[in-house]
Structure formats: C-alpha cells, structure tokens
Length: 411
Image (cartoon, rainbow, N blue to C red; front, side, top):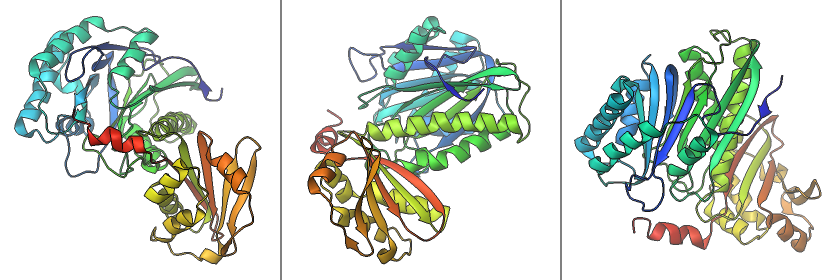
C-alpha cells in the first residue's frame, strides 16, 4: 500500500484525543487553548528554534524530548508567547504541567507545552489553569475535536493547516496526522511555527528523532514569509505504538515508509504556512535545478524567496526577472550568470515561459507573464547549468496588508 491521503484531524491515529477551549488568554470570543492527549505513553521527538532568545515552553519541551521520557499530553495556547518572561515564565510552564498532571493523573514531565502570540507578556495563570481543567474534561477522539484544537492555536493564520496520511508498515495500517500554525515571523532556521504530528506507529525514539531532524531540511527549513525567525518555533512528533506494527528499530523498509510519510506531512504543512503568509495573495515557489551541490541549490532557492524586491514584484505580477537574478547573485554561491536560464511555470498550460537565457532577457509576452504571475501558485525556476542537484524553497508575495497586520499586532 502506498501512502494515502485521508480525511481527519490530529486525532486520526489510534489512541489520540484532543480538545479546545476559550480560556480568554488574549483573544475574546474564540478558542485559544488546545490539548492533545494519548493515554498510552508516546515516544517523542522535537526540533526547535535556533534563535538565541527562546521562549519558556521551548526550554521546557527541549528538556523533555531530549531525554527518553514518555509523553502523554501537549497543551498549547495562542495570544501570548510566554517569551522573554524570565523565571516567572518558566514557573508558569511548571505550574501548567502540574495542573495537567493533576487532572489526567500523569507525570508532570510527560506534558509538553506550546505558546504563540505577543512576546514579553506574562500568561494569566488563573485563566491557564481554568483552561487546563476544561480541556481535560473535554478530551475526545472525534475528528471535530482535532479541528477545534488546530483552530485554537492560530494567531494571524487565515486558514487551518491540517493533514492526515495512512500506509501499511509491517502488515499493520499506520496513520500519521499533522496540524500547524504559522503565518508571520516565518523564516527557515529549523522551522518557524508551531507544529504537532501524531502517529500510532511503533518506532525507536532515536530513529524517530533522526527522521524528524532530516525532514525539516527540505520542508520547514525551506520556507520564508518575512525573514524573521521566531522565539517559539517548535515541531513535536509523538508516536504511541497503537498501530501494533513490529517496532521499527533499524533503517529498513519499514523505516523508509515511516520517513516517506513524515516527509509528506511536513512538506504539506510547510507549504501551507508559506501560502498563508501574513497578507499574502499567492504561494511563490523557487526551484533551482542543475546546481553543483545540494547545499548550494538550497541556498540559491532560499535567496530568491526571501528577496523583498522579488516578493514585491510577485505581488504586482511584474515579470521583473532582474530581481530574481540579483537574488541569486548575492546568495553567496559562485556561478556564471551567462549560463543561467530563468523560466516561469504556467500551471494552466503546463508550459514554461523562457524569461532569461545566455546572459540576457528573452523575447516574451509581458501580458502572458503577468497572467502566469497572477496565479495563486507561482513557480520560478532557475537552471544553473552547473551540475545535477536541485532544491525548492517556498515563500509568498509581500503586500501592503503585511505591513498593516504587523504595524499594530499588539493592539
């Protein structure tokens, strides 16, 4: 059985439950706290922000996932990031985990935490504790509970980001589900967002961490909205083994299937975040082919999607290819611009429009180029003619609305 996309939410894998509640952390009239729970203990893996300034929940979670500690629950709030909050912020993590422990009768160090929102504000402890109590009593394995949990962790996101796949591993049906939030302060340096993945696969913790660390390289590490790496980036993977497949303990065929499914989940969530960048009107995909090394291909592709001038041109549907070539040129990768070929991909006609080749712009229709760049998904391709390596980066256009959102984010 190949990997199959199915409907569902974060509760789709066997043994997982979820809940959401309106705790009034910052927002009014909407859910802003979520919980994911497995009665059966999970092995965990995590990847976190490379920002030197780390939020309290990141510090808390890193200490748990780096050890071989069982994990039962994740509690996430939106509205306040619990970042740059000193010892009080760390104390809030401890008290929150202890509250979950009391409600669900699980160890406090089996509780992971996540926060997203305004930096520098303290979480209102009374509302957090009330939220924990409500969440614990509302846990359910139904699909809608998972959908509500996803919506509860959103901040400036305009659409939910959820995906579920299944496959057969070792004769057992294995399911993997992911949910994420991320719209602003998005820039690759691990991954800029909150993302949670559940699976009922049985797998060794060390192998699972290795798989997670590997998959971010070409998924979350290849997205950018605004060049800002958050203080709260967290990607958590939980596996409870309830699929009853033979436990994956080596890099065999079963491990390959697990990694392939994890790649699908992470790439989908990463692209969904790039497409939903604050104020964005389109997903911009920069594909570099025939580079000399894989690392250089990644660097070149990321340089294009992070270029503010290129992003602004994409918003205006302006075929200003000079900005793309310029972004390639300052990436730090050495290449011969006379050998580069730039094309736009026309997804409607399944054709490429040649824009630049042999050191100069080509004779193309500005009208047709504008039509291509007006699509919701724009693909810019650069053929470096240097080797055989390729990479793709994902971003979005830069709009007036991005500035409007971030000019008064705290109000």
